[in-house]
Image (tube, rainbow, N blue to C red; front, side, top):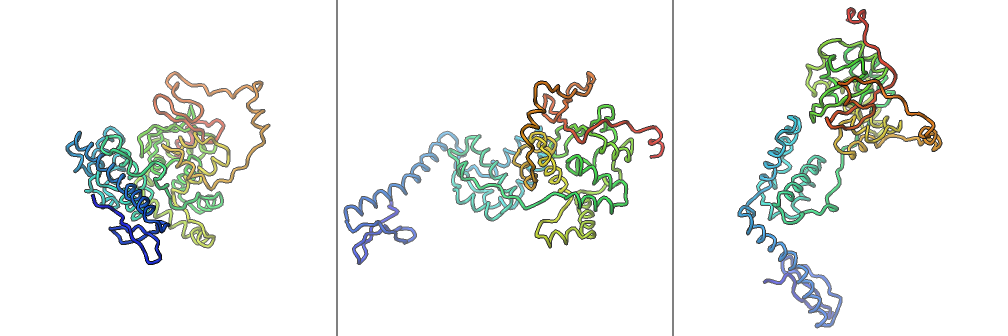
Length: 395
């Protein structure tokens, strides 16, 4: 087998190891030939062993799997997509879109067994997008689970961290400016609910009056992204907003007919017209978009001491990492310890749970997951009365 390094002695008497591939030389730090040969042998062995181990792994895989030498990353992507059968349409669409990403074109037809860490690092470097990192990591893990890789190409601790584009939430002042400038009742109510409930705009805009249960003060809907049922409890402030909206059918009949892109464009135009974007640029901070209301809710929830687990459920995040990212700009004021000690003292009776009917036994008073996957989160506090007959006639 060809040696990667050969011995070279310079005129000063020092010995060097010369790379037979690149021609580069590195000092062995000695003028003793016997010592130099020993160091050279160790260096050649260190270079040979990983290649030998890799060749052994390839041989092992090929012996048990005839396709081991030809299976590509496209095969991994296709099998991963097949494994999502039965998941929500949005989930499948998200994976389909990711698989078609041009950022993976350089490895799409590359055999797994010939992939190096440098190859994957180059994909991440060329893309620079968090979603590329996230899905490449998933492809890599899926290939390991299937036994198509004999070892991790990139070790767990060496995988690059996700880096998201800098974003921020809508401030209270900006929200008030947007709401006061909005003359259309439907759009104004939409912005107000975004501020209060933390729902994704696609979920909120598709709400129907039938999703609102006034007796139990809840709003229930299936998340567009995951298909998972979410149930939010609401209080007086949200109730007042809901009373201004239709009592049957879509809550936002006109706004719901627009695409997400059109809603985003119209919001951006208002942000521009009100001078919010200009002031943001002058302050050296990102401007805002409709999605910024999600960041705002997360920031306010954290500042108010809302438990992270509840915030994660309300926002619909599968991982707490995303919830922390959404709320990282929050300023948290720590309450005194005695406040929590008094609140949790045995002598203080717990607040009474709301009365629930037999059909509502799967709804809990705080955000959590249960056997049916229902999530209940509080939005505001206090009772909310059902709209009166007079208001229904007025609408």
